[in-house]
Length: 556
Image (cartoon, rainbow, N blue to C red):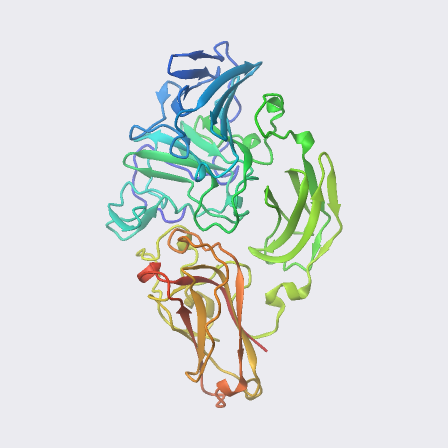
């Protein structure tokens, strides 16, 4: 993963899981079932033996996972804490039942219900969480892992980062590199599992399909961390940071705690591949079997820019889904969808370029004719005198853009956030900072020339943004003679974003009608565009009002 310092960590290594090919898929098949499959009661916990190499315990008092023993080694726990929903549920009703080759532990805490399932002969724990309301503030499951078993010095660790630089969760090492549990680099669509491997033991969380999560396919959240105390692996179902959607409620899962002999978890566990017909009759509250779900398929998408990947999303207040459009023709198929009416959105990169409605029925396939994206829906199709960046809903290509998904803006690896831009230099995009802050680099100058005919006409200037912090939004000054009004702030998340590895908010385009009188008539002279960040909110430095840039252009 980018950002490695190359520090030797001895015999232990790590992996941040993304795809099936990320780790050699060795020893992925379940161990044959053994006669020891079953459960016991030790007085305080239900003790489940999977009949393979995994024994785990669930507290009868609060539903915490109190032990994870794989091949005789205890992996669970650090700082006196167990693995659990949120920071622990408190006194709960905990029951256990065996149905053939499946054992189910059920936890009820008020309106929240949580489940652990074991299958005979597998080194996996299947989990579901049903959150019915806001009585539990956020929804995550954290697997707490003992210190020293897996070590790393990657962006999402802070073992070797002694200095706190922001909000007690962003740290700096002595060499100036930054670390935080927020710096996973990955969007939800980018990974199937998360975890570590020593080469001989792998411990992973295989994510669920996130149908009851919020934020869509491009949402970023903390996935794991490691410190001197130990490590944590997360399944985040709703995290109140940089959220663009309201919280969804209902049953989420399964997500899977999986042990392997060092390789990646089996791809049969991945969301979209996993089949759980064995759970259909277990009585999991809110569970919908495959037969009660539907599918949406599109025969193709025209009007695409083939230089970009396209994603199709489905969303309503109850659920969300997504799938990739085939590069050759735009064909897509989204399966396992709960019945209902959804907004269908086609994304070019991360920029929405088409929306419609679709209805899904249980057991049915909704087939859509070829979707035609209107040319006007893609801002890249507008004729421009000049353009900085690309209209894809991300700050990709701008200065420091890639680094900002796994580092703090103060990181020593970041190029200077100041500096001006010259159109026609060939470095317009790479010299333009991906983020602008009121207290850091507000007032950046773009230099450009116009022909006599161009200078004789009014033009529209556009600035696309992907998110903002503290209502930061761009105000422009042209040639120090014409100043735009301060635009109203669009709806954006109210929490941190730019400093915790995420540029994902609500894409918005600011437009400015610049009169002909603002331009220089000397065609050999450079016009100047100054972009300021306007806002009375925020604090100082990188927590002052700011915004992330998608593209800037001057239309013909």
